[in-house]
Length: 552
Image (cartoon, rainbow, N blue to C red; front, side, top):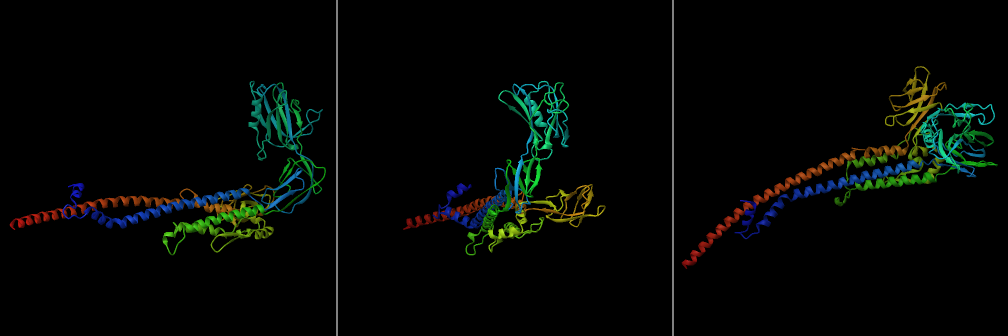
């Protein structure tokens, strides 16, 4: 008999709504399991969602740290009494407040500029040529009368070739494609362009600025047209000679090949704008407004993250329905612990260090959030300005200019200050760890300085020094965050496990539905049999009643 047939007979004899009774019995039997599965599913989904929010919060924190780090405030500012003549800007990690000088600009640096010959259009052909461009210093313009000489500055020459069908545009592009950047300043040694003087088009060559960056151009064609030398003549016309900038600082005369000077005052760049007939004043001073704003931004963001994490793991002692989704979660506790630990971690690898976040006026409150005191920042900064750089900027420096860091392992080299010593023959140490010498290089393969390689200038006679390798506070925090943000992090693994739990819930719910169906069928059969028996009793009773009534 099918389930439908069974159910069609229910209630026939007893008059009881056995369909509702069976449902009530089945529900009573399976309701606790259903409720447990529903609660487990809801709790698991809430936990997955909260882990997603947690990871998003950490990513937002890292993005803000990247933004803070990119601004790289140094706590100092350069000033100029006349910014139309020159500007002074803090641009390096060694900026200080001890500059107060007079400046007179006599000459601005210029780039050697050559043009010619004139052509009707950029598509005019230049013919088959082999051009070579060398860089150095001319004693005089080769178009002047006799005795001119050229002294190379040692830069690599540039060579280009054209064909009979090559155009002026092709020549320009060939020169620019062949150009190199010998001093790695981002500017090519020569820049070729095409200019229009209102009547004709001509090639323009412009070198980097400075007297030692002038150009000597040879043209191998039988009829040279683009030469600028003493052998092939000077078909190119000199428009501007290469000149050094000339200026006086506190009565000391100086020259540079550029108008952008970053080696005059350590940590500052002086930009010469125009010549001056009288002296102007350039100076530096402490300016912590930018640093204070960034520190306030860091503290505010950190506190938002900590408060969010605290809410996720909160425990309501009165009603556990108000508990956070990650109450008691070990991963949440680990992340909070790691972030809080950073507030008291030493920042090593900086001269005068180690430094701490407290040096910047940041302290930890009782609830684990941070507090920022600008007045403490100002007081600490005046005595330990390097602490600000330790917050923003990684440090790769040495105590001697003849010692340079040539390699390090960002993972294995530990931040710190490492003393270098060598006896010049067989014994070499960096940070007390034995180092291997190869030419002018010394490298370490173990200990805290593992992966560090330094280079000592040949012939400098240096036998000792200090190497500073520091990771900024912000970088150290981002390293901590990356542990939880990387692919297959502990958060990802937790979410994967929770998704497995959801799959298990679905399987158990499917099994429970099968049990409900079987229970329903079993009770239906039992009550069907009961109804049949009751109906039979009723039929017998009816017969007896009829017989007794007939007798009477």
